[in-house]
Image (tube, rainbow, N blue to C red; front, side, top):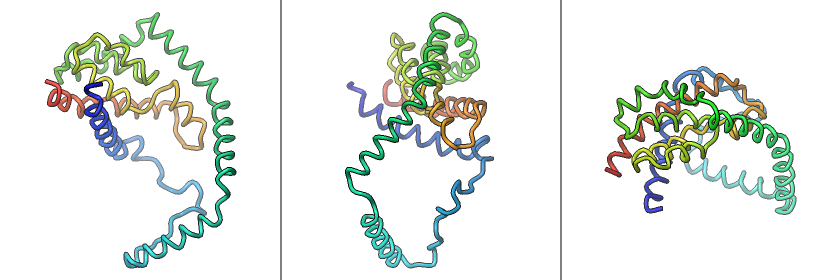
Length: 215
């Protein structure tokens, strides 16, 4: 807990930086930027002055407040939709999470996957580089498993993996099923590629910061 503030702000910075970079490289950079619902295309207000924009925003804000349902109706609607979403994705989350936990515990699969990242962690001179890459590789399964893998590692390694496990965002026990249940046009292999890109970028960005603040 003595490192909490440092961890929070470094994670915030790394996640933002990695997201900014991955939007500019494939596969995300090749995806369409067209609106899903063309009826919600933003209006071009570039011709208005700043004062006019503020005035228009104020008027439209008041209109939205007047037309919105009551607080209780809003709470009930969000509660109901939350329950329906939970019922639709929870079985997938539990089944995928269990399968990957069994693979991590009883097979060497993720030891092999870890070797993909090993040259990078060795180059970055992360303490106990193989333990670090195993934690990174397991990050695709669940957000909290990587931290359990490196619990006995030096503080720099623990800090790096704790940040990477959050900044990669994509993991099969929760975020992937959630995204796949939406209308976002993403395929499983694209999500895996994005996870790999985010993992590499996260390691590159967070490692010098970890050495800077913790050494």
